[in-house]
Length: 338
Image (cartoon, rainbow, N blue to C red; front, side, top):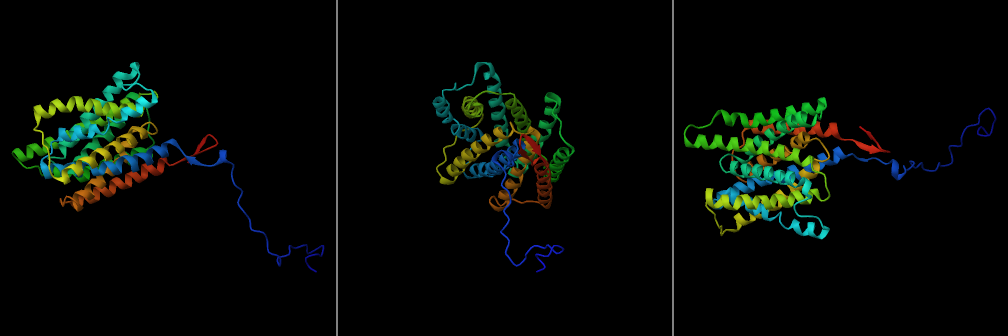
């Protein structure tokens, strides 16, 4: 036969060949997400998306019962206090080690100021626009502070994503800034945008301070300190600057509870993400909060969403995709492969 002839030593195709199985890589050679990838995904899914619901829910509570911003901040801080039980079970000091206690309290104070400005801003300007200004200012301030103080460089793709996301935010909020009304209404609207900007600046400073903290149970400690410092500062301010309100409708309490839970999840995820990736990139990915807030602003609050808002949201999403794709990588045998 031809298959056995010395000049025609061909394989026998009449017999079925065994199925080929790809060789399995040892466990130490398998690819796993890098720290930057995990940080960006946690910031996007756990930080930006839940935070997008906080602004609209805060505005709903204010519209339903004129819930003051400081009272809402107090209710949010109450959700942070049970973390003290976890710290006690672990045997860690509630306020952190003495050598870093001042910086930990400074981080908590900056976050309280940031959240207080944000809650005050959403009461006088649309929730989507307030989130836009706050996230835009936090992104650019984080990039500039990291370059000046930490000497951390960014790649060209990262800068492209940062500038693109900032351009998207300008597209969203620019037309609104150009049509401010004169008189008291316009003054309150301008003040709301100023508060949103200051909230973003305080957020970027807080993230930078948090990156300098390195001790066991750091995340739990700063979360508890946020609640403690927020209560100490907000309770006197509520009775001096605002009038406490005790709502009797379930909608207000449901919104307050949702704000407390979602904000706590977002706080923990953002604090974790900023230890894995550049704070400016974390803030840029958090721009997804703006897109979620605009959707809720239109479908839930029935507030107008201009074509510029949709265009700017698309630019923001495209910029987030650039940053995420650039930093997606895996680790294999101790090396990072793009």
